[in-house]
Image (cartoon, rainbow, N blue to C red; front, side):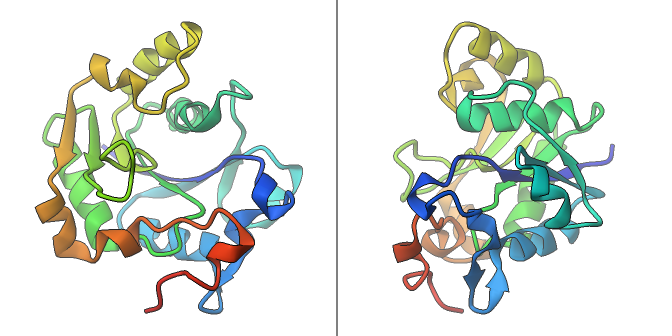
Length: 198
């Protein structure tokens, strides 16, 4: 089955003064271009989930869709990704991660296609222990997410209790690069100079 590569361009970027984080330059290249390049090598089609009207200009060749449930945070973004994926699984990456690993993304997809509903990489830098915004999700996650949102549970990992989740071990994740680098995300202008270098 085809897999849709989804760039999640959510959030209000309040710490950036409202400026789109993914359009910032890291090592001379826009973050959104870095994410798109990694996903293109692994997926069959790209999708940009963004609510800003100007998003159609960011990657002109990529389909743009909006959140169907506004104000639901990152989980609302994953919901939109699956809802707009036309019944296909999705490989999602947040657009503020400048160093996604194509090898890791390929491993997430390959693992998901073995029969799981969600595949997330383990991470020591995340308070959740996993990186749900760099992960693979099957279409069957959509109703589970909707049930959680209907119940007022906006935790991005809340629906994990309701689906078959595989945590890609940190030892395997590390085969594709330094996890601290791969999962580094730019939240404020101060993060740009501290982005790990090549």
